[in-house]
Amino acid sequence: MTLHTPVTDRILGQVQRTHGCDLDTLTKSLSDLSWGQVFLEVDRLSREGQVQVTRDTGGRYMIQLPNHNRAFASH
Image (cartoon, rainbow, N blue to C red; front, side, top):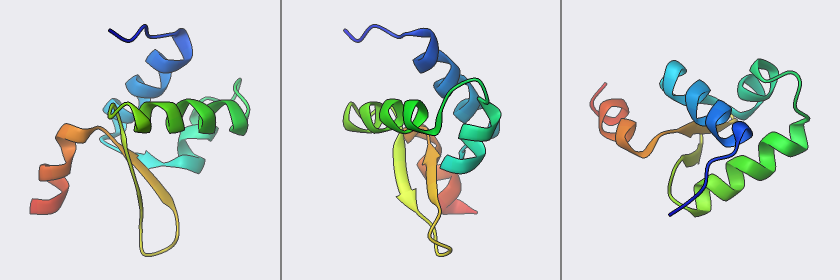
């Protein structure tokens, strides 16, 4: 079982509220955290399968919860 830190909860909460967002927007929404802190936690969450990171056609890194993939694919 994975322990969630306050940073983890904040990142997961923000991604859930926005139904996915890009890394820069996520970092700006958590302005008290550095870009590096957000990146490292997103990387860890991605490796654990708690978020999915993809790259859009504009080169931005998009973060979403795994259960939102089907919804995005159908739109």
